Image 1 (cartoon, rainbow, N blue to C red):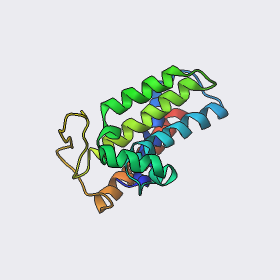
Image 2: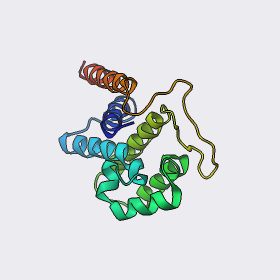
Image 3: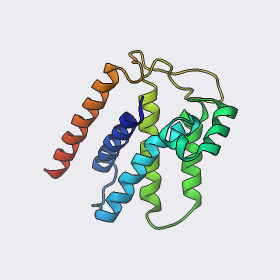
Image 4: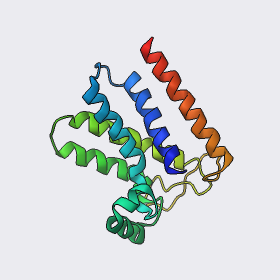
Length: 164
């Protein structure tokens, strides 16, 4: 999937998480932090690809991860989710809980969307088993456009439902 689809997916899953998981009413700064973390988390797994949005901003780290692990391996796995959870649990700072949830929501949305592609992902890394949905699509195809459009409509529906 392309970065824009991942960004839309991260925000969409963030709206769903806020609706069904975060029971407290969030004020404006909390919403900005939470959705910023969802957005960043939705792009973070592609740090393993030097040409991605995240990879271009952390080029040295991205090239190292790409060279050592490859694309859609460790950063698209349950191990990565656990690592980020542990890392975020280690530190305590303002909005830490919202950032942790937002990052994890974004990462999960990224992993699910990449599992919908032809290549799939190594969800159980280091086990070299590729996982993908039975119905899959090619990155940057018309099918991805349908997925992006559907995610936008779902997001708008969830936001509307929150407001009612």
